[in-house]
Length: 420
Ligand code: UDP
Image 1 (cartoon, protein in one colour):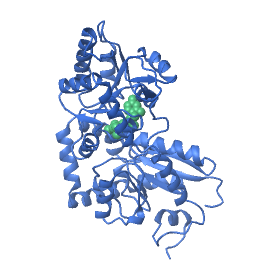
Image 2 (tube, protein in one colour; image 1 turned 45 degrees about the vertical axis):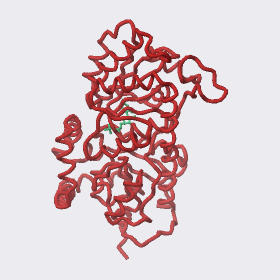
Image 3 (tube, helix red, strand yellow; image 1 turned 180 degrees about the vertical axis):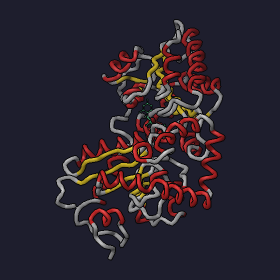
Image 4 (cartoon, rainbow, N blue to C red; image 1 turned 120 degrees about the horizontal axis):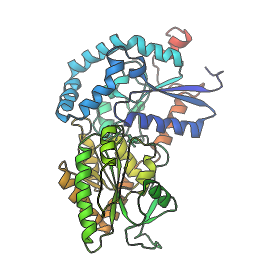
């Protein structure tokens, strides 16, 4: 292995939602930036490409349908968290998917396997987590060499499940490079006010004009995860009505006009519907489908409305955005709501009208918006990806002394070496 010019990192995930791929891309980009001379990385949706029927064809569409039905989601989450069910499912997955996973790993011949999906732990691999606060037990595999946990609650859940502290690293969730506030607060010393609470950096006008939006306005960013789910359409309509009324009436005394940017993700039907809509004379609205420019859009926004997806929350914190949460997947995303609300940089409401009025009340109070933005940045872990990448490089460093004896099944299987 040491003779290879570059070591190979294989990231296993599945495109259930957008967060797993986004985290995988974050790590791959940072590995390339910081350690491109030492490693090369492949990202593989192992379930879709190597899963047998029906998993290969149906897992991603099934997840998309499930994400639209929170109660059904919750039933799956709870049932599969129970020990006997989790055991049976692990056995079933291993039995059914073993060959496919093995083929994937043999084809890529990696030096390290990183799992960024709870359903990729059943094979003995190095583990990385991409939920924020409420771990499903499938994430926490005691045989992982390293398990990256993003929060205290995850850390505790991992030790409760028998992972040793030496196996755990807590750096935060990996976020793709580029997420940072591209505006400065107008209340910052030396800032020149322009009527709103933000002063844009030079990059902001070009992003806004590409979207057909105006500078010197608040921009409310609305998203529904990678799949554009969670009543996104209804929320957009309620928000449009509220902001158009405020804009038309001049709003509160300190009201600066507001506009909206809507990211529909892979929900093409909603994207087409919203793009065809006439928003009237008092509101500018940009509607896009799946975009790779989320960091640009967060960079120009004053706040974000989103379901409680861990990836979007982590990115919004790095961008210094107050966060209006509009829904969550019971179990998996419930802890994320407390993270935002208790952190003082957001609120939760499920009713579209309440969501719209809450956001309008923030925009009407620039000082409050600025405070929430500062708290959001405080909750960010912008160096998480770099630290995770460095730990992985350390893990695969040639001649590294193992901190504790362990069976590295895949390495031995690849090299044909026998267990000591
Ligand atoms: N995302 C993106 N482009 C889009 C919509 C979403 O890159 O058009 C990204 C978003 O920035 C985030 C991820 O998809 O990184 C969504 O992850 P999250 O954990 O919030 O929700 P999920 O979709 O996994 O349920």
